[in-house]
Length: 267
Image (cartoon, rainbow, N blue to C red; front, top):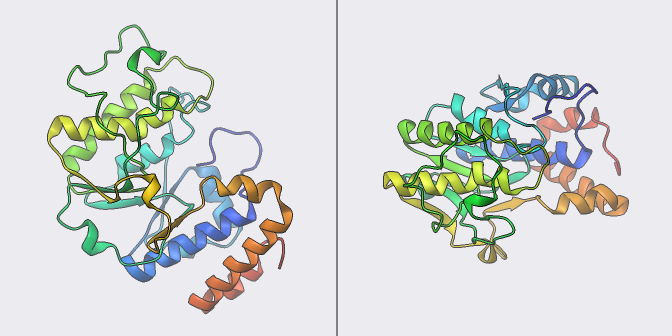
């Protein structure tokens, strides 16, 4: 999501290549894919000539002004999920899934990559949150249940999806925090998912028990923190871009013309 900016929206070249490969690999192994984005991000995609990458089209999402953008920088994911009809999978733009996962997620209520540990600096108690006076945490929400990493999220049931998303949006719209500190965003997106599932008796399945188990696997690649290295290390970025370019052309040669029109360093 571009966010409420006055300047033209832009993505780094390595982010664009990852986004392209993510969508194409999903189409190859798991079916159709739709991009959810705000108007500024959609304009960027169109300018780069990438609209065709998402074979189910692009859905415009708007995050209300009531949601503080600095604090809830990933709120667009929740508003995207609100528009989606379940069962469906939501995948981050910087996550590439290399294999068919349909047999893994079928017959599950909820499926994600892994659970998260309750680290106090990231997942503090409810007294930490700066909320409007009238807001109340549901007394049935357990602060003991492990949060869920939502870089990939499958939900089977429409009613549960609505309950989770509405709970998250209510939390965000009642938040008085004005500065980003991570804790509010991951509560709305990752901790509330687990709390809502536990309350409604929904089973959360995961590919791996925790983040420590995701090394040496070949199901997915998540750029996540590596983007910080690519942002500041130009040689690393050039090597990464070349690797991504070559992989896209090898797997999807019909996209080479599209790639050649993009402003990519190292090519």
